[in-house]
Length: 343
Image (tube, rainbow, N blue to C red):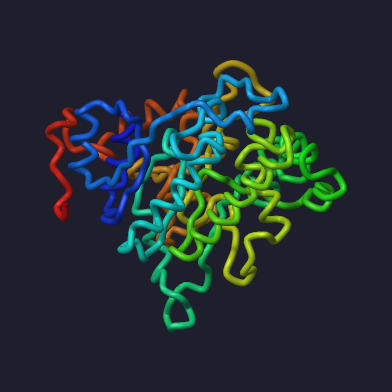
């Protein structure tokens, strides 16, 4: 229940009144269902099953990662890691009233301090006048050019110099096709927070899922867990495969609706608890809320609306959350939480 309150509760407590759509276990406890109902969440029961034998060939099926070892009923050709994107595509398509901004997110490690869409304006097409110039927004992780501690270059990472990127994409696509050396100054994009209009998100999900399907047919080195969602998405973006280049943009780290804190709060050159730091974080002096370091005080996203990968910083984030319980709950007992007004 604590996870639901941090995810769903923080959205509702901070002014978001739109749709929340997610998949849940078929064995979700009654108390959690009642809480999600009160919060106006649309949820689909997802039954996990064994994957199709066709995608387990090649000796790379064994993994302890839950989303990379099983599939969901009806999508046995996709590990759950990939199948969730097809589920999201279908669920968004089924929601006829979902006409504003959407964000495809991870769920375990996201927390909200503000409505994530408050700064984005109208999601309608710019061609109709007054709408958004862009329909698909990717969130950058901290890169060299956004590093607030440039004297410590190891605290940021560009995708072209990431050994994890080349280790996951080179075996599938080929070193000469990937050309990581061309991306040495480009940021890594996060697959756990992708924002767009209805059309933009549908385009993103369709291209990504089509690539997953194509990769499954190529062989073991192109399948999950050898090739994962984030690295595939980055490869597609830097190859221009999501199309509509003028409508697609990336949001620099430390700006906009999402602040990804995983890399900045872990110092890889330290050990033990000393690894987990707050030196790249900015805090509001009065409220204690976490700020976007590259936004001005007048910005609608000066307080970072969305915090992603906060669990990497649990050494100091858990105490911080305990001090800011008002951000995600109005009562200690989930059953006493008032329902959202419009449900």
